[in-house]
Image (tube, rainbow, N blue to C red):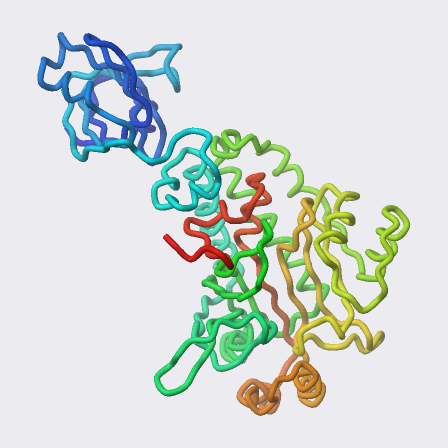
Length: 430
């Protein structure tokens, strides 16, 4: 016999099987022990009788504590009282790795769970979240391959800022210093002149001094860049990507969504709907009229305003044409409305920005002036401006905050639970 997963055993329903995994729960008396075994696929109740396994193995079963690893041989038996409707009647048991006083117990504080994050990720909740995250990311790779895009990897160590100098992590680099990547975008833009349609998925670093439930210092950005694309085509493409990835995650992880008390069918229905789009000025008018929030033109939307706006919608919303003065140097002016940038943010129904993107400016002099206004030296970006000097073409791209999307669709209160080992202003270990 060979070992099979618990889910394979449940699907098999009958016969003798060999299982291996970790003790999720245990209870019993001096003659009978009940062990709930877990592995990556599911959980199953295992019944250990002293008269069947013998004194030595029964004592091993009796001494087991939560998270001990074991192997079991037994016969599957239908039982409506057992989780999943089946249990394993054990004929033999072996201890692989002992566990003594596992430090994660029920109802412990979030900070304690983060202190022991390397152990807390074993929970059913985190396992469900990680499965959904994995399915979402794998679906995204499929989406771009099906669209004829090429994966294009760029440096994590970069010579300049791209999203604001105040949020840079500086790193010693031999006899000089460089910065951890805030985005792949500037290098991605260079890549489209070779491959035209490219995408990436990699770690992103922002030294934002923020302690909110939506910010991480290290997160995974899913980015794309495409030649010949305008803003309308870009926002349509972003919606298509998100709908595909969410739908695929739901179809592959239905039980995990149910465990997290998220309605998978509601997510699918949302992906079948039209998602609205509006200009920044329209968004300001909505929250002024309906929420009495008066924001002057020129300021980026804060968390409060984004949440107020999204209280009036049940699906994600694209907000376009933000003020140029509040945007990055590479976001071009709308030629028909020079104080507006050809850019967009997509907001989730929970009022969190999940995607940001734009057309890319082709005006070197305008970009230089905006860099100077931000206190940057335009000469440091001369390599970037070369792409505009030698056969420049219209192009556009966006980035998806993976953890923010996962937190939204999983119904999480904090983005930290959407990544295995969160890094924040106050937490850099374990």
